Structures are given as C-alpha cells and as structure tokens.
Image (tube, rainbow, N blue to C red; front, side):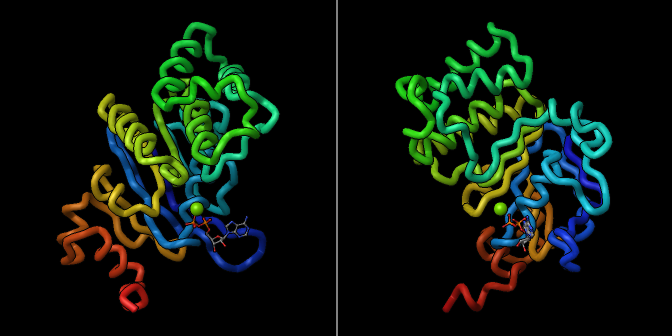
Length: 246
Ligand SMILES: Nc1ncnc2c1ncn2[C@@H]1O[C@H](COP(=O)(O)OP(=O)(O)O)[C@@H](O)[C@H]1O
Ligand SMILES: [Mg+2]
C-alpha cells in the first residue's frame, strides 16, 4: 500500500509548487501507472515517496509506515529504480549487486538465488564480471533494477523503467511487475509510454503542473473523458491536443 496525504513540494524559495497537495492511495496488488508531461512532477513525487527528498508539506506512507517519520523502516519496504541510475563505474556488475545486498542485509544464500535468477533473466551473466563503465545504458538499467529488488521489497517504485531497455528486457520487466502485483504487492511506476500504461496498469493517474488531474482504471478514465485511448485522454487532459496535431 502507498499513500500520499496532502503532499506538496516547493524547491527552494521558488514560490512555485512542483507538487501541489497530492492525495492518492494505491492498494495492495495494484500495478499503478503515473503519467504526465515533462516537468509535471512525476520524479518529485517518486523522490518524496522513496525518501530521497522531503516534502514541503504533507506525508507519504508505505504499508502504513510514514516515510518522513520512520525513514529507515519505510525504506526497507521499497525497491527503487531511479530514472537514469548513476552506478559505481569502477565496480563490476557482481560487486555492485553484492554491495546492494550488503546494504540491505541480504543473506548469502538469498542473494545468490536472486542474482543468478535475474542475471540470467536479463542476459547479463557474461557482463557481470566486467566493470560497469563498460556497460551500455540498457545494461546499466537492468543492473540497477536487479540491485533495487535484491532485498525482496514488497513495494516497487520505478521512474521511467522501460527507458533504454530493448523490447525483450522491457517485456521481461513488465512480466516481473505483473507477477509481483499478482502476489499481492504494490508497483508504482512513471512512464512516457502511454501504450505501456494502458496495457499494464490496474489504475492510472495523470499529473500536470504539480496537480493530479485524473485518476482511475482505464475504463473510468475513458468514461470520464469520453475518449477511447489513453493518448486521447492524455492530450485532452494536459491541453496539448492542438499542439500535438500540428
Ligand atoms: N532539484 C530541483 N530544483 C528546482 N526545481 C526542480 C528540481 N527538480 C525538479 N524541479 C522542477 O519541478 C518541476 C517538476 O519536475 P519533475 O518532478 O522532475 O517532473 P517530471 O519527472 O514529471 O518530468 C519542474 O518544473 C522542474 O523544473
Ligand atoms: Mg521525471
């Protein structure tokens, strides 16, 4: 479960809210997609949810634990794949995964199973012994994903996770996300790829200019906006319809 209660963010003293009073609850078993134009506040929301930045006002919760009041406890519940992960270039892939496992106190036996499974799934076995600086963008993204999930977190939070992944890796990641939710866990991810959100998500939220402007199942969004595809709904809601046609 993920919950935002009146969460706002003002960067510095800009006088502009990057996020304006977000209220949102995402239940167990939900695969939740977060969409919106560039600068809408998606990454800001995700950074608050994962405890990387503090909100200016409001609170967020994971499985009932408040991130702002009990950050260590809350962070243990989250696996976070950031947008364009910065990894340690001089570590090998395997060293990086062991480092992540150490950070989260994952036992030798558990980490071995996880690492073997995911290196094989993402076809990274051969690269695991090489330094990360030799990796392509997609390989880095895969490694970051494996590392983020090494402690078997119930809550997965992914910021633009399909970016840089080839179609096969992207497919495999989507299957893993579905499987994780089917087991009663929660996945929250942002994406620019509307088709992915449309096909994959149990519910979707649209954010624009720091405000939540729509939220619901695909069916509810369709009914509310009188449109058939998420693309139409998105363009309608974010007011880009005319620009997009030109
Ligand atoms: N570190 C920062 N300092 C100042 N402004 C920021 C910072 N990060 C993001 N912003 C601003 O906050 C708004 C939301 O950005 P962001 O959450 O990154 O949007 P998205 O991920 O939806 O593209 C934008 O106007 C952006 O310029
Ligand atoms: Mg972003």
